Length: 107
Image 1 (cartoon, rainbow, N blue to C red):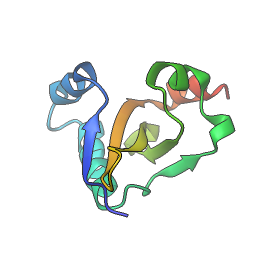
Image 2 (image 1 turned 60 degrees about the vertical axis):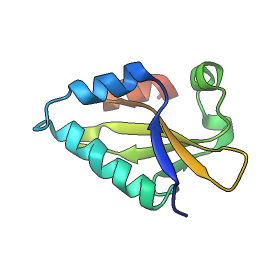
Image 3 (image 1 turned 90 degrees about the vertical axis):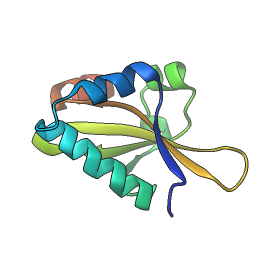
Image 4 (image 1 turned 120 degrees about the vertical axis):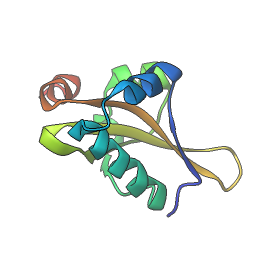
């Protein structure tokens, strides 16, 4: 299902993304992920509700979480929401390296 838009959850995260060098493989991976998610909002891996870290639920008030694999073991985290109409919106929550990802999920 096509996403009507893909947004960063806040300005600070978007600024972090924009500050990455265009040569950075993570930035290129995020750009590919954003394109893929805009074409199919469910292109990432869905995290079972009971496995969504409480930290993310508390911080963003989300009830779903999707993970998109980036280069070099990095992960993009996003949630799918709606504006109350038919419009689907993918909100990018964060991206992190594998070590930080494991810490967040308690592995």
